Amino acid sequence: MDESSGRFPIDLKAAVRKLGRFLLPAAEDAFLKLVQFGVSHKAESMVINSTPSGFLVHYLGMSEDRPASQMLAQLQEVLTGELQDRRLPLLMAVNYFIHHGAEVALTVIQGGKVVDSASSADFPSQIAKFPPDARCPEALSLEIYARTFIELDAHAMKQRLAYCDMPVSWKGKQLNGDREAAGCWNAYGQTLRHEYKSDGQRRSLEINVEVKQLSESERQGFTEVIPVQWGVSLDPTPFSAGSSGIRLIVPANGVETQLGAFKMKPCNAWSEREGAVVAAAKSVSQAVYGKGRGPSGPRFKRRLSLAQVSSVKFFVLMLVFDGLVAYPKQAHLPAQMLHVAAQLQPYLPYLIAAQILWIMWQLLIAG
Image (cartoon, rainbow, N blue to C red; front, side, top):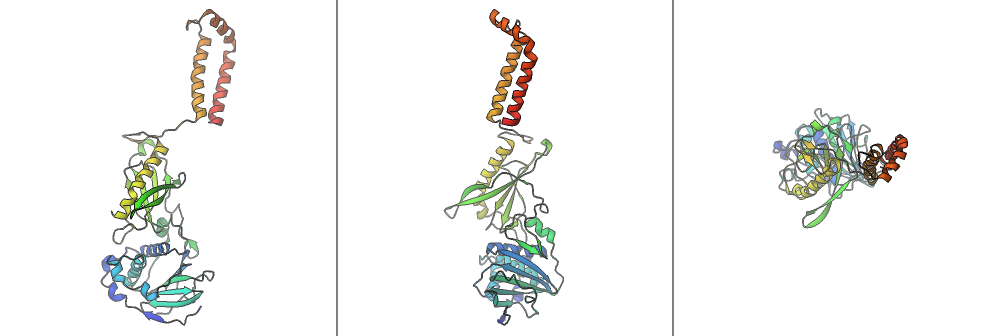
């Protein structure tokens, strides 16, 4: 890997000093922003390496034509919202690290070689000791040279990356897709597809569903919606359109979040999706709990199959038949039917046993 390419120092610190109010709460939040940057730029995977001097983040399979210095430029304009740019997650993370005494360097790799690099200061680079995967000739690497201790909370990241499709690893362990760490519920059914309109165009929204079985006393509340923004789960949002015990995982790329947090705030990008989310919440609630929903919450209902409906009808008819055979005189039957009933009475127990077996076969096997 060629390390002879020139490095162009850029002055980030002057801008960072003015952006204290845009700080993220913790280091894992900064790393989660780096995940969002990778997902939004279609990186194949993200590898976080711990180095003696900090961290090296490799975005494998990510091709970037812009110069590295331009990737880190206009930090103030992007963070303050003056300029809408998909570098926002990257620059939010850079703002955090520099505010906490670190230096950063961004390196562009093409054809397995370093073609460009930009840094906030001169420091001994570790990329030669911790290079990107040689199997990915295209990569973008962010090096964090930490002058103070920066801790990465892997568990906190796993909680936010349960629904992230891009592989994210640290110390050889995968951080994304850990449903247990994130407290996910049981997956329910297939992915739902609902359409919504954005910028005058019809778009498709793919919603995954999770269900948690609740007791009658626990069935209070609403459907829980988890917006997923560029691979990172935002804070859950209660949705009054559905029922408790149901969770919808909704793609939310492009929505706005509260400053320094992973909490969605009202915005047009989410309002466009709300109709589709309402439709999904109602359809899942009906499928899981049935049409009715009493004051104490949803009640479980089950739609009978054709075989089960047939069994119920047969059961009612056999009850009537058995009653006529057992007590023909009380039913005031004609003489001929009284004679037939008298002949069948000795076999009534066997008839009832046959009826029970037939109904069980319908319910347990055919149903």
